[in-house]
Amino acid sequence: MPLPIQDATLLTAINFETGALSGQVVQKRYLSDLRGYFADEAAYAEALTHNDVLLYTVSSVEPAEGDGQMHYGLGILHPGKIGPEYFFTKGHFHTQREAAEVYVGLRGEGFMLLEHERTQESTLVAFGANQIVYVPGYTAHRTINTGTQPLAYLGIYPWNAGHDYGAIADRNFLKILIEHEGQPVLLDRDRWGDDGE
Ligand code: PAN
Ligand code: ZN
Image 1 (cartoon, rainbow, N blue to C red):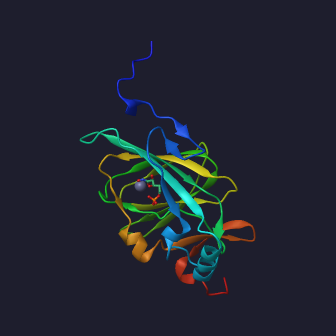
Image 2: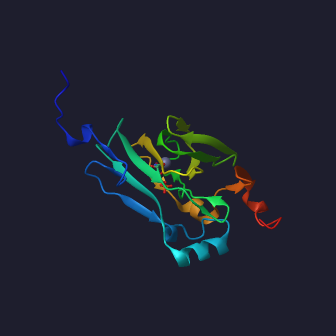
Image 3: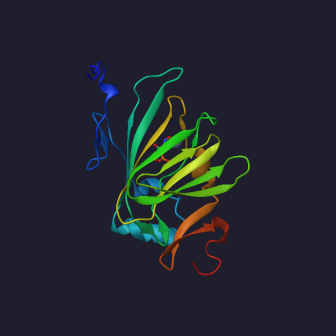
């Protein structure tokens, strides 16, 4: 016998078409929301004059607060590029730096770019359908879609993790993931523009 559902937050359905988790709002991030994030500023400005495309959506469930509680969100990141750089999420640290997060890939293919706050070490992890990435604390994380279909995933985190976008908005990640000769290539942001790319 299944347990009776006493609380609507016990069971949530995923709507891949709208990006919604049942009954929750869908936050939409458009190209114009990521001003200053992409390496190729000219390509960004050019793309924006044509179409302020939807880059990704996030829909979150926050069942309860307090010790031991978890929140989670559905992210759907669309495919595309600005210049040679693949579409990505803004990326953030958690406000509670020690808070880890589990990312569960549902659809599509791409990567997660991780950057440790103190060591500034970068790690690129393959991430897509049927893949799970553990994001440790003190680690900035960004999702990148290198495929041709939407990259859909769940992120599950302590209720009080919080999102700190400030550091990434100010200085961005140290690495960028670009398409080079049809392949994803990780490059130092500093090297961007050195050889005409
Ligand atoms: C995710 C992210 C989601 C969107 O649910 O919030 O991928 O990315 P940004 O928040 O960086 O725009 C998560 O990591 N939550 O903690
Ligand atoms: Zn997070």
